[in-house]
Image (cartoon, rainbow, N blue to C red; front, side, top):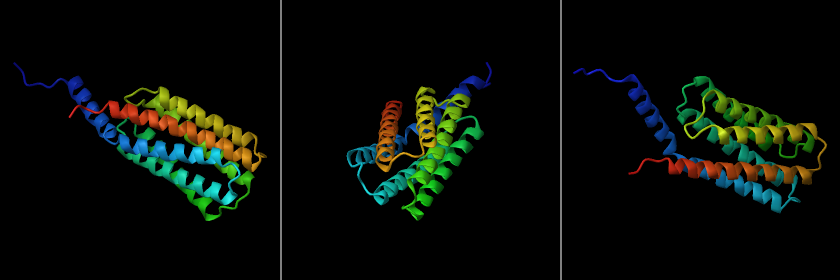
Length: 197
């Protein structure tokens, strides 16, 4: 008889403990999804909203996204610290972009479209890299899909920078609806992964 501990059992128990710490905070993902979905619906329903209302709503969503990404980087238990750093970096970038937009909400549509486009491309690439390098416990499919959607949406805004405000508002609204729906799906998936109490 030996008192040796099986290293694979320790690793799997450690991974399960870390997984549950993120799963326990599924409500944050749900709140982010509801807010993002709500902002997206508001933009699609009222596309003639003033530039100020649009930019303030967008800035608030970016700030919330930044806080969510930073908290995800701090609470996620992936093996690769580099992925956590990239997620945190994209959260910091979202906070900075949101605050810059709030600083001068009457910026031109061209500049606003380019700022949003660059942020979405960077955030999408980070999501794809994170899913490929250190996939979450639930699998990499949703993260890759979200990353691809963000890259495509950001690329569209960068290529067609001469969009009218109405088209930009509708396009951003649709993108936020998709992002919010994906976050809601992820929240309910995380909720189902909670241990029985």
